[in-house]
Every structure is written in structure tokens, then in C-alpha cells.
Image (cartoon, rainbow, N blue to C red; front, side):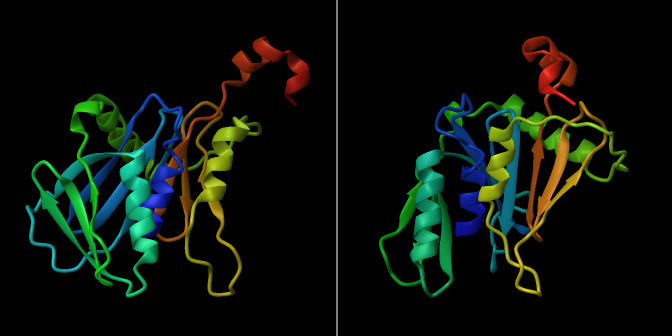
Length: 204
């Protein structure tokens, strides 16, 4: 849980116009998604003994709530805890080590439902498309650096994880995977517009 909350938080910077990340709790697990409209980070964690609705429950949680869940999960050395959904309180995590419960308030009033529908549609559209790597792709280094913050299990050889990019063309959003559960999207820079702004010297 801590890893998934942390990874989503990395894609919801303080200056973002998007004020909440999305949390989905359902039979398949607990999924956190963060975005500022330019890059998306999504990660999930398994759950046991889920007894909620089949379609799951969606909450919209601010940066502080995501950070609190990350901190509480890392501090819980027993490695497990209990999740509760209470009306008006949002998502409550009760650590297995009996520390103070942490509540991530549901901030649905600040959520842009149209944005989250677009995020879901984007993942659906990109996933499974055959890659067709163009010769040149440009990125905002600040957006690309967010993926360096993603936590994921190391490989069997003990080496670091890889950022696996599926590129369709130089203008389409690019699907990213890191480790077994994290996936994201990054929007490349339009090279023609960039050339108009900075001149041809800024591009190959």
C-alpha cells in the first residue's frame, strides 16, 4: 500500500491544477492513480478478505492523504493492516502494529470526473497497441524525471528496475511500465511547436 500511494503521489505535484489523486478499492486490490494532466502514475497493491461491492469503491484523496497512507504503511513493520471505508471519513487504515489509525479524507468535491474518465479511456486505448517507434521523440525532462522516483521490486539479479516505454509515434501519449504493478503515461513534446519556440538548434 505504501509503495502504491507513494508512486501515485510522485505524479501529483504540489503546483498541479489537479488537486486529488484517485483511490480504487475493490476485489482486485487497492489502486492509486496520480496525474497533473501531463503525466500519469498508477500502482496497485493486493488486498485480502475484501467484502465491499463487486465494482469496488472510488475515493478522491489529496496529496496529504496519499502521503499519510504512505508513511503509515512504511511504519507498520508487521506488514499488514486493515482498510475501512466510512461515510464522511473516506479511507481509514488501521496498522497491524496498533499505531494510530490514519484517515485519507474523500475530497470528491475537488475531483474532476471528466479528467478521470479521460485517464481511464487513455489507458484502455494505449494498452495493447503495437509499438511503432519513431526516429525522434522529445520529452520534458521534468516529467520524465518523475518516473525515476517510482519504487518497484528489484529483479531476480538484484539489479534496479527498468522503465519500459511503448512508443507509438512522436505525438501520441506513451505507455510506461516499471516493475510488475506500476504503469504510467507521459505526453511527449510536439517537436514542431518546440522548434518554433526555441529554434532548430534545440532539436536533432
